[in-house]
Length: 265
Image (cartoon, rainbow, N blue to C red; front, top):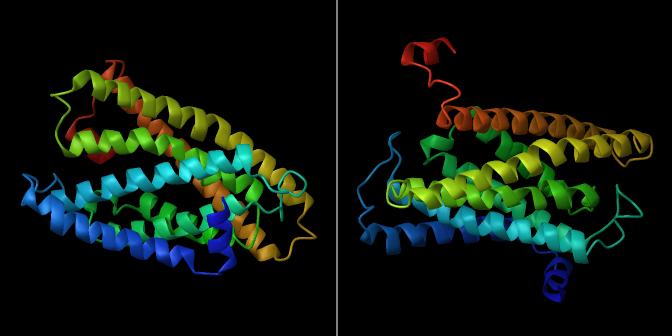
């Protein structure tokens, strides 16, 4: 990880580099590759360009997989001194991860302007909050917990991106077994990481935050982190319920609501 240390030592705005790289890669992928496939001219059910939608899925798959790798690598091999100091302990990998995640979330916000499926309050709130949190992590701040929250927890996004790619390419009927395996893998990984482990990690974070409340460099920043953790935790439960509801409908344990019922809900 010497390359990571060199990049951090150079004090480059790595989050801006990430944002620019993803934006350029997205443009090139759409204009130079996807526009020459059968996706050109197609739109999703909500009217989003299919090439833009698929480009987003491919780049999200790569970025979230990389963030997941950094989270696992940092936790297993580059914890620095985070075990001794949960608030100000420093992990070089986590600092690098914070920059990558911040740039990725800024790019997510940009793409929300073009992808109607993700232009929703929960997605926009998630991207804005995570971008702010990730920007603060390289100071360093709460690297001990960031390795999980913005790194390891991203593991569930790998099968999610695969699932969205299958959906975008309309391969559900062509590869039904593989599609089901990916769906179940996503649901299982999401529940393990974001519904079960996430609340426990949040509980430990709150304990440490309360203990360090009077010694932390900025009470305002710590309070923001606590509010953000609460909001993001509720979001995990909200998404978890949607996943469970979809699974119950697929298994025939719950009926799909009618249009009238949907409007009432």
